[in-house]
Image (cartoon, rainbow, N blue to C red; front, top):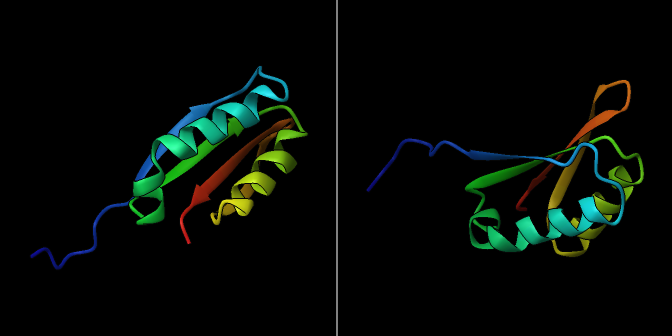
Length: 86
């Protein structure tokens, strides 16, 4: 049995250059792909976007599915949306 804290895996998905609805579709596809690990808290997804509507649509849709998200501005028109299990 492992006692030390497991390292949280991070998967970075670069969606810069894409406009809605593509970033949302790709984000939801990835969430579904890793759903077991996401719900278990073993992975965090980081979506890098540069299309402002994505900063609203992705967090809204992952929240509906029971996940937490945080949006961080990393550039003049770039954001990282981090999605984790509850």
